[in-house]
Amino acid sequence: MATAPPPLPIGLISFAHVHAPGYAGLLATMPEIAFTGIYDRDGKRGLHEAQRRGVPFYATLPDLWDHCQAVVIMAENVLHAEYALAAANAGKHILCEKPLAHLVADGEAMVADCQTAGVVLATAFPCPFSPAFEALVQQVQAGQLGTLLALHTTNRGYLPGGWFVDLSLSGGGAVMDHTVHVADLLRRLLNGPPATVNAEIGNSIYREQWDDSGLLTMCWAGGAFATLDCSWSRTPSFPTWGDVTIKAIGTAGVAEVHMFNQHITYYPASQGKGAWQGWGPNLDRLVLLDFIQAIRDHRPPRSTGADGLAALKIALAAYTSNREHAPVTIT
Image 1: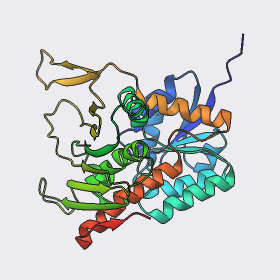
Image 2: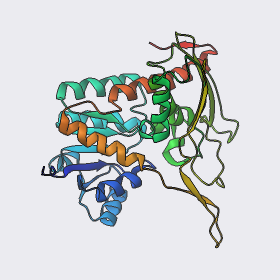
Image 3: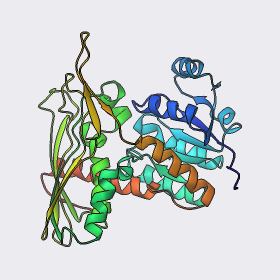
C-alpha cells in the first residue's frame, strides 16, 4: 500500500481579498497541507487572523519563506506582482488570486520569473473545476453542439466595496474583477483567445468614479462571438454573491450552464434574508489539490500563470475599447 506524501507546507500572503477566509479555512483543514502561517502588510489584520486560526503571524516575507514551500497570494490586485516576484526569487511555488496582475507587464514578469526559478505559478480560477463546465467542455469536444457560433455569458455579482473600489489598489472596477473568470472559460471552449474585444463600460448603478457595469463582445477568428455581462449588479438582498452562466449555441445544439446551481435555498425563521447553501464540490479545494499535485508531479497546473495573463489581457483590452470607442485586437 502506497504511503501518502507528507503535507505540503503552505503560507498565506495577505488577508485583503474576500476569498482569503475561504482559502485560509481550507489551508487549515486539508490533510494534504500544513498551514505554516500568515504574512500581511496590514500587521494588525494579519495578527488577528493568525491568532484566530492558531498559526504563526510573520512580520516579514523572509520569515514566511523559512517556513513554507509554497504560498497563496490573497492581496490587493496591484500587489500581486510584488509578492509573486519575491516568492519566485525565494524559490516558492505560487497560487495567485485573480486577476493575475493589474498590468500586462507585471503579469509577463511573473510568468517569466517563475519559469526561470522553476516554480509553479497557478492562477486561482475555480470555474474550470466546475462539474457543469467540465460537462460542457466534454459536449463541445465530442461535437454534440456542432460548431460553436455564439455564446451568451454572465458574471454578475454584488459590490465588494473596500479596496475593490480604490482604483490605486484594484486597477479597475467590475470589469477588472469579473471579466477574467469567463474570459478564461471562453478561451478553453474556443481553443484560444478572441481576436477582438469591443466593450461598453459604465458606472450607472452606483455613479462613482469606478466602473460597476460592463458589456463585452468578443469575436474569434473562426467566426464565433461571445457577449459577457460582468457587472456588480446584484443587490445586497440577493441570496448569494452572484453568478457565472454560459449559453452556448452551436450548429447542432444549444447548452446552458449555471455554474453554481448546486445549492439549497435556505430561508431562516429568524430575521434575515434567504441564502444559497452549496452542496456541490468546493471548487477552491479542487484548485488547491491541483496546485499541490502540480508541484509534486512537476507539471503545469490546470490554470497556469499564462492562463491568468491571457485573461488579464482581455479585461484590459475591454477598458481600452471603451476609451477608444472601437474594437481592440488581442495580441
